[in-house]
Image (cartoon, rainbow, N blue to C red; front, side, top):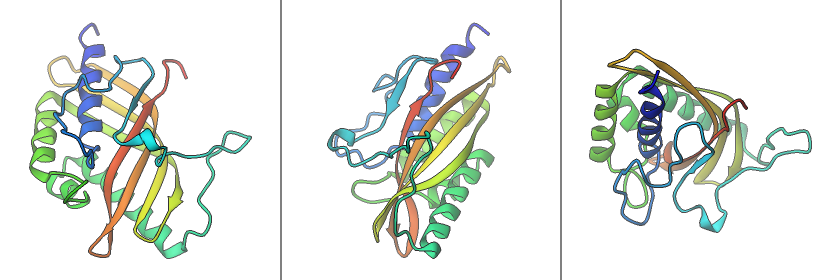
Length: 193
């Protein structure tokens, strides 16, 4: 298991970097940009300095759902999130790229394809399992969805498996009438939590 703790950091970086379009600065896809070593508290995201991305917790620790989200839009956002997770977990690169927003301030499909292919070459399994999906912010053309996330990674060379838990806010934007993933912000839990 000696190499596995080092596998998680690059895999998490690839996971997050494949989820971080929309950075107005240059995105070099470096695993060293904003990543804490595996098992330490980390926050990944771009453009959060203005506090525009986030979620609120109720006194009991539950996540508060945004008010006034139309039921049909909520269903469409959740369906888009489900496709985003399913295509990632099954390695359906074309399906995954189709759910990503493109253009200025969003994803570069060529860059995302390269990152996903590199990840597939390094790991036998990279699987994200979300729970507690909640729309925490909603506007007509942009929404944010909170989810607790459990990520399992299996190294290709060693077969070692690591599971990491954290919280993710996925930012959606409407493109051509469909909700597309524009950005992803992830915070890993401390070990043992």
